[in-house]
Amino acid sequence: MKRLALFVLLCAALAGCGALDDVLSLRTRVQDAGYTSVSVYHRSHNGTDTLEITASAEDQAHDYEQIAKIVWDTYPEHLDQLSIKLNGTRQTYAEATLRDTFGERQVTEKPDDDAAAMKSAVTWMIVGLVVFLLLGIGATILVVVLVRRSRSRNPRYPPPPTWPPAGPPAAQDSTDDAK
Image (cartoon, rainbow, N blue to C red):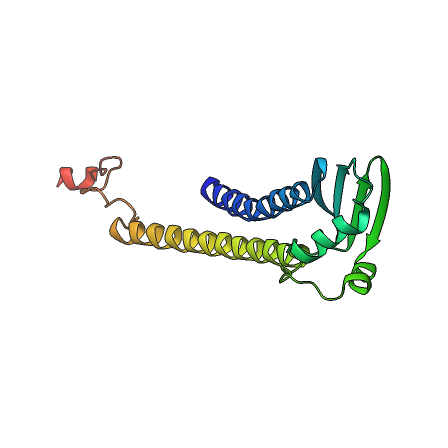
């Protein structure tokens, strides 16, 4: 059971590394566009994927739409909402707004992980339950076979009678002695 838990943890870590790489790459692209103090955070809550970006810019030419375009064209993760906090003020975009403003995405969007992760978790739980039940049935069959085999090798017969039968000595007939 510990090995299964370790395997699931390892798979989750590897999947998380890919998403982390996407976030770090996006952070670098926003910084390369001239923004400072950039932080990027992707979260999923109740099936809604939100990307939050906080940045500062001294140049007034830098605006929300420039960051939104960088995200829309280069960030491959699924987005339902984009929240940008630039110089302390926040602007939020829905996916439909981004699509209307910038058109189709220039990057191939990765599928939404929430449904796939839930389906994968349910699949692993069912597989684990089936394996557990099969092991339990196998162990039960093994115990029954071993118990029957041990009984057939060592039958439980009653102990053999002792000979001559134990009991009081036979009474002798006194009339036979008189004759």
